[in-house]
Image 1 (tube, helix red, strand yellow):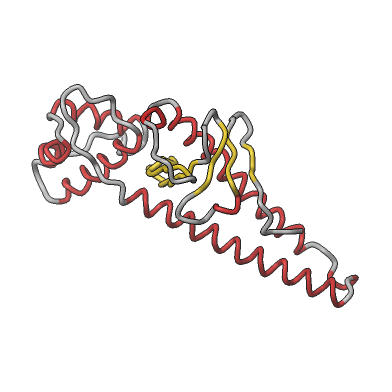
Image 2 (cartoon, rainbow, N blue to C red):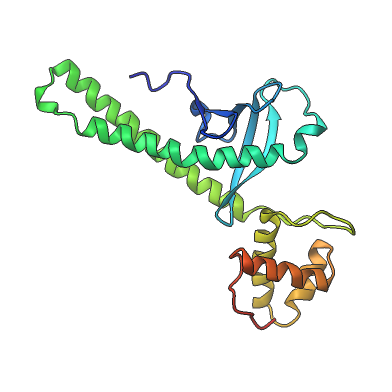
Length: 211
């Protein structure tokens, strides 16, 4: 079993493939889906949902504007949301398989290879756990950007960030909605609509809080 072999993993129900070798690093490589080149992408776990926070061509050539438009970004996010748990499951299955092999029936050479493989799998599992932690930390750090008149509806990422900012402002006392809306360039009416949407999507408690 060559654990370091190049391996692209397809995602069921998607045209995209992810390079397992790049999993756990700062950038994850993805291809397919009509892309003209391999992309390197970054993700953050925002409000329990994986969101794309960075992308660049693997070759280094400039990105084309069309790549930043919907629905391609949503499609990559959806593909990663399917890929991630399956990748974790495959690693767990491999570890369980090797742990279950009867070491007593092995030759010395086979036993050495066996335990070497288990050590590699342990390292890979530790890397996966660390990556999950980094994705969560990255989600906490996603900033809110000012929004002007006529902006598109808020993304889940923006709603999650809005909810965190509102909660922080509530701890500072009265005027939390006013301070939060001013920080991202929306009026109070829009802020209250966002609050209702956040409650519907689970980013804020369903029961109305004192503002």
